[in-house]
Image 1 (cartoon, helix red, strand yellow):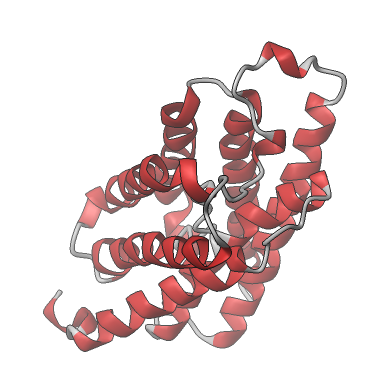
Image 2 (cartoon, rainbow, N blue to C red; image 1 turned 60 degrees about the vertical axis):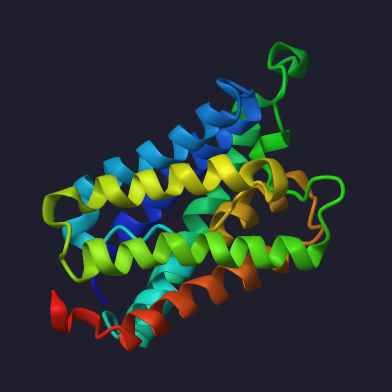
Length: 222
């Protein structure tokens, strides 16, 4: 197994949770700030580590890439382990960094950037929204990056897709689109409420994107 690829996935996911969840935990810039913190991190690692691992930094993206046959099962399992470890470590580092800091200094902040359902959003609605938004994200990854259609602009396309998804879904579900993004802060805060939907929804979305990708001809038209 490629240790450089696993290292890239670990560091990339660590950065996504530390910076993305950290922006939410500090409430800086509100929803727009959180969206761009995530999106810009994805853009940065797409260009910095894309040549090493593809810069999935998201188990749902890896699931979609596995279904679309861009990677094999052994690689996917390695990526999943690295992603969950990186995301969990980042959340606990973030918890340590913010310990003792007056939470009132950050208006609108969410506890360690944890993704939770807004009042009135049922688990069923949250599941469907997470699946749909992740579908959009993985669809962009497959067509823009994996199939090479966007060439050097692929990283930007993926990052901006994530920004758009968070701007829409953030107020409703936290717009995780990423099981590792949810698991770390959930463990660090001890709040595991509805955590299952943040696994099932994104994975369903990623797999659905891969199925559609195959139906549309996959990389044959690239």
